[in-house]
Structure formats: structure tokens, C-alpha cells
Length: 91
Image (cartoon, rainbow, N blue to C red; front, side, top):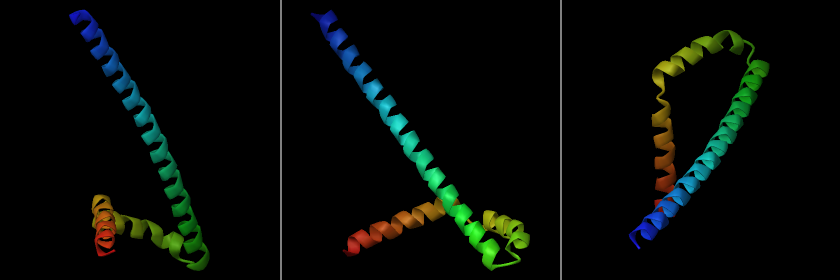
């Protein structure tokens, strides 16, 4: 009887691992899609700035360096989450 229980537990663990692998694959695809969306948005903004602000291509490297020094990407994400949470509480 004990051997049968061990086999059942092993089978359940195997199913859990397979489900986790499948979920991980889905998450990866979603993240890649989000990254592609962000790349497109950045390209749109760069093209807009190049067309409507003539010195943007010249100033971009300087602005990029400045932004990289001053902006923490994790802080931006946390502040976005805080704003969403705050709105949900207000409603």
C-alpha cells in the first residue's frame, strides 16, 4: 500500500512540475510580447522627436546618460503600482 501512495504522490508532483513549466512558458511569452510593445513605443517616440525637434538626434545621447543616472526603473514601476492601488482605494 505504501508503494502505491508513493507512486500517487510522485505522479501528483510530476503534474505540478509540468503545470509550472507550462505557466513559466506562458509568462515568458507574455513578457516577450510586452517587451516588443515597449520597443515599438520607444521607436515611435524617437521618430516623433526626430521629426518635430531638429536637435533631438544630437541631444539624445546626453539625455539618455542623464536619465540613466537619475531614474531608477524599479522606482518607476513601484510608483505606477502605488498610483493604481491608490485609485482602486479611492473608487
